[in-house]
Amino acid sequence: MYAVTVDGSYGEGGGQILRYSALYSLISGREAYVVKIRANRPNPGLRPQHYTLLRIMRDAFGGYVEGLKVGSTNVRMKFRSPRPVNGRFDIGTAGSISLLLQSLIPPLLNVDSPSEIEVVGGTDVKWSPPISYMELVYSRLVEAFGGRVEIKVLRRGFYPRGGGRVKVYVEPANWRGLNRLYRADIKHVLVKNVVCRLPRHVLDRQRNTVIEHLRNRFGDKIRVEVIDEHCSDSLDPGTSVVVAGYDDLLAGGGDSLGERGKPAEKVAEDAVYRFLSWFDVGAALDKHLADMVIPLAILSGRDVEVGIEEYTKHVDSALYVSRLFFEDVKTSIDKYDRFYRLSFSR
Image (cartoon, rainbow, N blue to C red; front, side, top):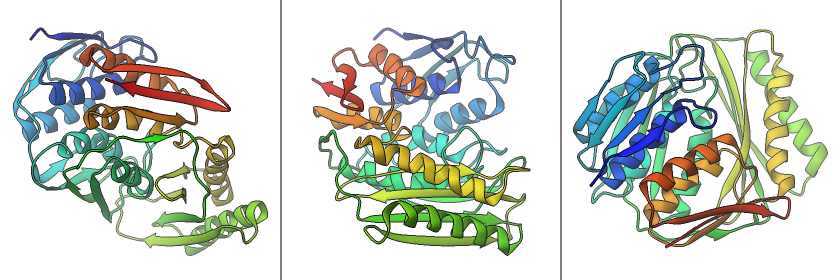
């Protein structure tokens, strides 16, 4: 079978194209040749976090990666096949554990026995969903497709040193399709409120702001539950808020990270605003899940039709790569009501 050549500068030209190329190479059994990696960025080529992803995938699943070095603009890779994985993987920096799991979890759903891994790196870092989002929201999407994933945070990891520790248990999927354009009624909102190595009042201010905004919007119509996490064992200080709303099948939400000079109230407000953006649009999937659903839809082997909050650059890049690897899967996206409809058919 011929190699699939992927233009790494397509669209926004970020690391996501490389991550999806590695994932699809693994689950399709085809060699991937990714060229012009991050060509339009100020520091083109593989960055340390991308190098680490490919190294971990090679170590976990076998195979080869040519051009595996920081700064490389062309990489050729082929992995043996998905298989259960048990072990510990260290990203070595504050590189995102959530982004790594987006490449590792889908193939682990398509094997014959469970996997249990521990990953060390960044749990709450920029340009990535916080690990609490993966725990509260992404896990529900996996469940909707017939799989099961449990994510447990052992230690938080923030920029610049990372050092977070996350345990992940993945149970193989009994695959089923998903057809859900609109979210159903939200009866329960779960908030993960995290503050590490900062005073208790920061945690309280985030919590109080979230509760105030949600009560102002919903009153007593929706049950709001807040889980506080005030930790002191992270290597660096940091905060995050994830607001997740649950219907009968799925979850969607919003998130926000703290940073120097950003008040606790603003962190909480941003998370609530992003949650309400998804809630008000009414799509089944929020904008983070909009691209995360694509590998699951392909692996399911079923027809899938979902409503997504927004047609993001991440969705466009994920569809670009998937169409190169899976020519037999017909994908389409079109405007539907106040959101977009994403479809997969065989």
